[in-house]
Length: 185
Image (cartoon, rainbow, N blue to C red; front, top):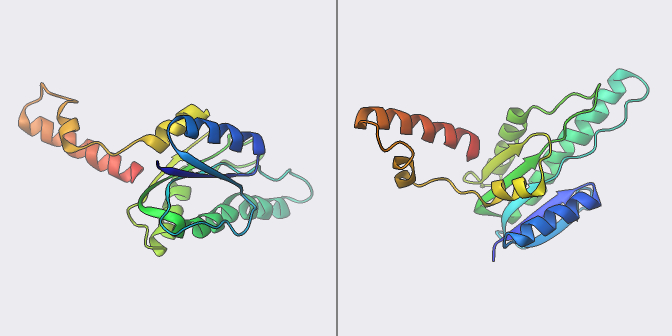
């Protein structure tokens, strides 16, 4: 049975996500995002779901608030990913969730979040871990779809456009495969 680790600051979301993953056939471990250290066996986690942190409330000066936003919503996420990285299997999946920001909070840049997470994982010898960023915290069922997804095999691509000639098919498939690899590794 595959193991999923879910971290996040809100107990209700952890519980809902855990139930959805358990229903999809995962053995689920949940932990509060601020629980340190999160321990487990090296190479034991098939899927890691990181629920979004709650942004700090705007108060006081803008610069102080900006520092809290970066420290609490970005740097804390990267620290947690670095802590979890050794637990991940070499072919694991990481699903990072973001919240829709409430004004005046800035939204997280999904591409930056993904690239920096991949760099942290690569530093921990997890270059083949697939990382997805799901913006605007979706339902637990949608997150399970990301957690359960796999990269299509080459033969599955042929079924996508059976009426194309070889040259058109090759161009289409090359575009799909490179796009899929870029966003879903």
